[in-house]
Length: 145
Image 1: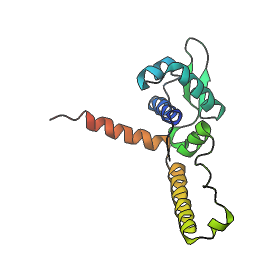
Image 2: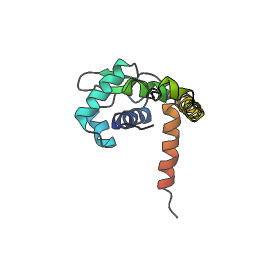
Image 3: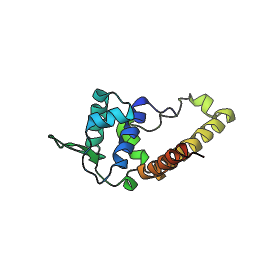
Image 4: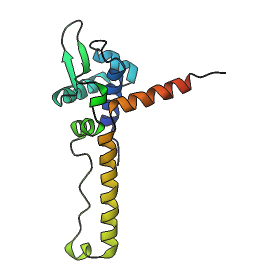
């Protein structure tokens, strides 16, 4: 499975908003600068995520973006689905003759298990889970002796 730049940037933006949940709207320029995302591209991603019900936007001088729901209620599966469309591509095509071969069937079974595990992990993992892990990693990088 490949993670596109769109998903990478979208998750960075959501994590930035999650860090500031409850503090009011965050301006796109601020997120773009902190997360090193081109602002014009971030605008597009935030619009997609707003339409998907992940973020809300407020216009005006005190406007910006914020999470639509608490980070614990936003699952990675729905984020990636909003940003990418289908989470995992379709199974590789096979002709009917090849589909009966044990070598083809065993591969299909393997890829089906892999697909199920990826979907399970994405459904179980929330933005809050990533934020908590990010905090652990940040604390470790600031630890000095």
